[in-house]
Length: 156
Image 1 (cartoon, rainbow, N blue to C red):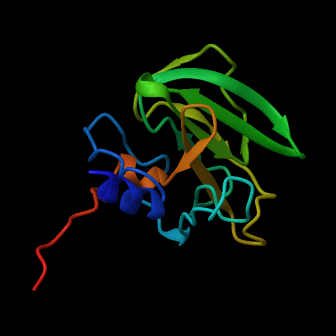
Image 2: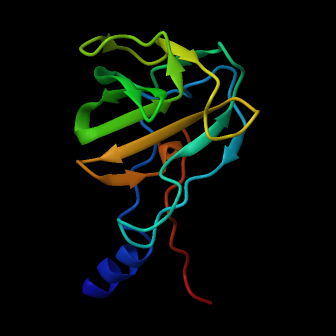
């Protein structure tokens, strides 16, 4: 059992469960992933702690799942909103303007703000969508809407 735990840890931890149907894409229609999640090799190392989704300036940003807005404000000049979900999950969205205030209870698909210019995708507007589990464990948010479970196949 220790071998399997060590092997999974080397892959970035235990895989997330398959989507439950409680989560939706934060942009509609389903956006193109401009830049995927890149787990850092160590918690302090470089990586891409979320995914960048192609969008249009002013496009509605939607709550990916049911929860409560735990943060709504500006960080480093960009509008950010975070939603706390059951199971210790928190999704983050940036850059977002016209944000719902902290404490707002959201359902999947609720409008939480609009995509603003000034993200880190340059001239092309994009939504940086993140997922944290616990206090600081970044995970691929696409696991909320796509089946990305690791499947072990037999040898040979």
